[in-house]
Image (cartoon, rainbow, N blue to C red):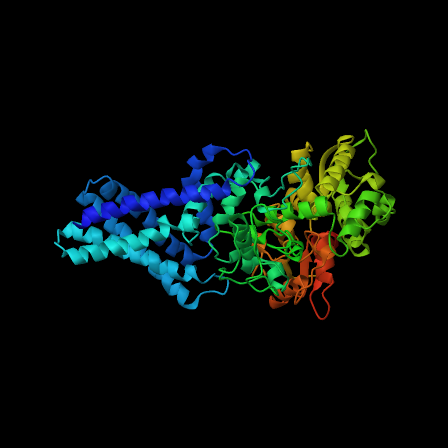
Length: 630
């Protein structure tokens, strides 16, 4: 009797799952139709077991529990479909099913135990119920297979009770996608992996380099950013449903830590609310700091800003991609935020605080600060560095970026130039021909301004001949290497730490004296570590000049932002503390007297921390001292 009851429950669950998926698909269909390669569905197993689990594995206990509960569930569902869905009732499949059930019991039990003292980042409400629902399903699966293997005759009431437990557990999955329950992520998550908005994340190393580059807009009337939920691509709406509300993005977000009104997890859930035509009243996680739950609601065709998400939430983001780096479901939070900013800037024309002033300066002078272009290289007047004119050639063209206007960072640039001269490299500058690369304009949503600046600088570079470009600015490095190719600009680009590492490996640069520092801690710039995936070269350079690096708790691709990216210093949304103060506290915790940096914005932000703190030194300054270039 029990096998037949389980077969009935299985097919009812399949029907419920089909109904729910069709119902949810109607919600996703409200979004725009992007080009999507359906062949990605064939890549779901690899993307699930390799790419997704690579992120989950960063938390070993959760990874083991996930293997148990998710692996056990996938195996159990496949075996149930074969043995009970098709009515085979084979003992060998029951034996395998018992193994899957026990595996799932172990995983669900581990997750239930973890919920006893759940981290603050985890959502409660229905998510607190989920481990027990899955445990009930796992116990029912184990009992069903055990009864079949032993041939035990069950009383009708007991068989019915086990079937009810089986049905209750199956309902969590079968109805989750249609009713918006926690297990909707299981179906939406798998589809999201196959139809991901950024398929390049799963490509070859050459393709993965573009996985952090923003999508250019066509700047037509129907492509001016995202103003309402229906403006998102349908597979982006699908990706929001993949969120498991684990809060890893929340824990990594520098703006949330600083008490600014941004929580990446809440933002994704608000977008789910918006595409569903609901409110956030049922949200059971951490709110935006200073904004209580229950005040946000929307609909697919209603404006996002004003009812669903406040503009201050969008302008709080530093675009550091820490949320994306930590997300186990590979959701692209930053892309969504920038798309919404684009609509605010291009259509509404309003950027808070000094943001509009910076964009006006870029339009009028091609510099963020409104400086004359000729002043960008005044610091190099006595260094005998040639200025590369159109039609001329050099080995390495040094682009300095906006740091060239900052008196503090000019010391770094001078040290770097002298070091390259010490190594005997043929170098040149652009002089007054170097216009802004467009990073700030793009991050503040002025895509039109970005494309104008990018094409202008590309034309300047294409009129000259060089072996490669080197820059000490990770933001400019990322633009040139990863974002300009979409507009037709293809250049060989190195960050200054990469070139220094190469020169030291070749023996062209050798330390001849102490750098003046025995040990220090190194702060990874977001646009070098996460965007550029370069964390080794800076450390190799420091090791090469005899300096030991004492790592902060958050370092490498998981390093904490300094607060200087995404235009945050210009939009200047207040919080309970400052992001650079938090990062400097990380540095002070190591006991190091010096923080090494490799970015002009990081230098400015960290040196702006008041009170006793470690000294801030760019890697180029340390190298120049060690090789006696200064």
